[in-house]
Length: 446
Image (cartoon, rainbow, N blue to C red):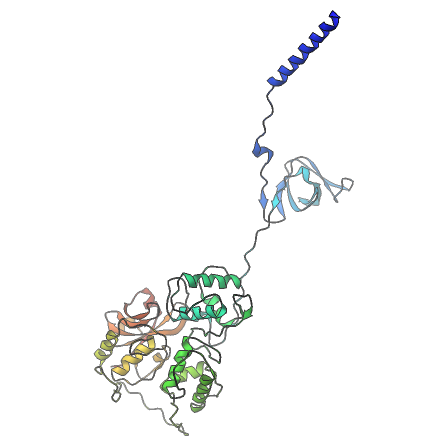
């Protein structure tokens, strides 16, 4: 019995010793980053990696398939695809399959690709992307008004167009760009404006359509259903010539179609009712016949131009001289810019020139900025250094070679003009911008 007790004491001592030893040995510590080693990511197959250990390159996904090549540890391979526990790879000139346990795999995460912008459609001969100015937050004028009217029509903007590119307009532009797969910059460059006015665009509901709002580019064809400031300008001219009654609505309606058709027939053009570039050019020129004039059946000789313009009868309220034109322009400083207006309280650039000339006794017809420089009866000036007080100035823009702005020179490299960007009649000086975009001057008073 005592012997049994001795054995039990011995066994108990051994167990106690083992327990003490086990407690003394530190437990293994695992690093979280090592246990969950971060896997490198790539955007797509194929990608380059290395082998963890020696691995057999097989002809197919099976350990029983033909051995193509033994690949050493640390060798560089190209992974073309992974399926299950096998990876399709290339090693030098060899191709085949290896077990994924023996290579350093990478995680393939597909990156969302920005969609390619919708190509800008081919533009009509009357209009090209170069005729547009870049529009962005802070801009104002008739081009912004047209943009807002188009965005309202498409459902991206609410309210009434005010000609000011603010935060609301910027959000509407971004929404339009996103809906039509353009980069969401909030900036309307020349190409996207051309697409907006002439292409098949998606409205706020995602439906494809074309806008009725007319492009702000001079000379673009106008037809029934068009709306916008240029339509208003056209209607005012038709009213002045007696072809249209009432007030300008800004919508190219049935009455406007009839008025344009009557003007075209009276002036020897095809009576289509669409105001194309040729119709507009004649409409705004001195050669335009009003509704009461009977066309002369036989052609008459073109009268010789006179160097000194003659005063109109009863229309002059300023001195018939250089000083008269300049004084008239100075008196309009601060008046608001309104596209198509020709005074007495608001103007666009060519309207200011028209108003000041007529008020100074020079009888001219209402024209666009790009038609005034064609008056060969006025001496052409090709250098800024040769300009004299009272000369008319004509400019293009950085994005277009066509004349699109007019002003009156007052001397000292300064001029007065109705500015769409400033929103009023202002005085400006020749800066680098005006120097490089100066086209020519015309001297009315020699």
